Amino acid sequence: MHELAITESVVASVRDRLGDARVVAVVLEVGRLSGVVPDAVRFCFDLCTEGTPLQGARLDIVDVPGAAYCRGCRSDVALADLIPLCPCGSADLDITRGQELRIRQVEVA
Image 1: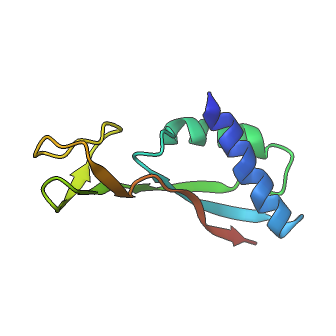
Image 2: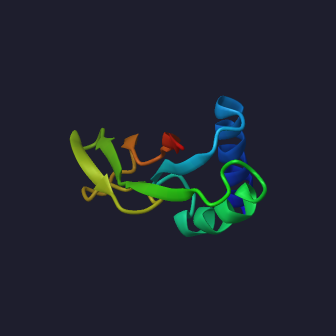
């Protein structure tokens, strides 16, 4: 489960930036095309924050839908899953949104 390593990295990044400040909430953006399972991150968050200044913090995950530009039909298309395919049938896409995995906000006490 790579979500454990990802969650450990999120916690480490927050601690590197804020030190021992008590964290109340963390907001993550997770793109639907990132390959990250939000529920697994939620599960790992409590494990990874135990004994740290983030223990007990709320984790909010913002879902970022997938989108791409199709070079075949020259249109913007929504992508619902990890299979990048335009409704016109083309797979010649530039992914423009949905691969995000970033810390958007951290709230401290």
